[in-house]
Amino acid sequence: MSGPKEGEDILAEEALVFNPSLWIGCQKKYKDVPLHVSNALTQLRQIPEAILSLLPQREVPILDFIRLELPRQSAELVMVKIDKCFSPEAPQMDIQAFLRQSIPPKSFLTIVENSFGQAWFDGKVSLSFWVPTYWQRMDNIIKAQKHWQGARAWLRKESTKADLPSRLLSECELFASIGWNVPLVKAVAKDPGMTTGTLAQFLSNQ
Image 1 (cartoon, rainbow, N blue to C red):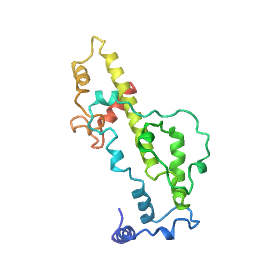
Image 2: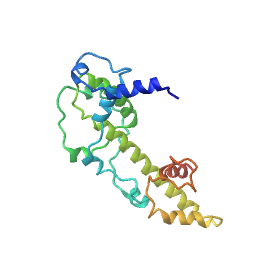
Image 3: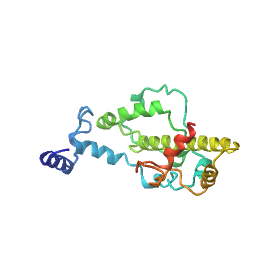
Image 4: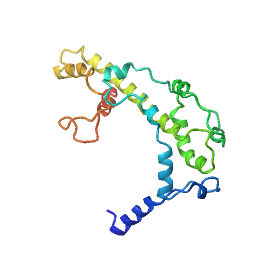
């Protein structure tokens, strides 16, 4: 537990205002940066509300979520060097066309995440700040959809067994009313952070 002095230091650090002229294009390394600097990048990386509104909300019923047509995630190895993904040129983007495109594979997303802070410091803005955040969010959504598809397939297979508990059958029916990633009630989950998405991952692995 942090002491009063440490807490005061954190509050003082958070109160600092980020000055781009002291950091951007100054040949600095994005490593162990002050809190107010990392907070500035976090703010820049927020997905715009107009884009967020197009993503499937957690409350969308599982059956509807399973049927959603999501962007594909490329499984191909990305051969482009990461430094070629960033340049000082302003981003040129057709939002609707972008949202229809496949997203990069997970391995490439990890590389982008590890390189983005330095690209920002170097003044390379060709990739909109929110795009990697969107890719990561969509990666999680695609993964969740696959888990629910697997969970439904498992429940359908189990429903053919004579000794199947009636409760399991009722859970299949609830797919039409329960959100795909909403918090589980306390009666079901001991961990308050567990969601229906956690349940999908468990069932899909059966």
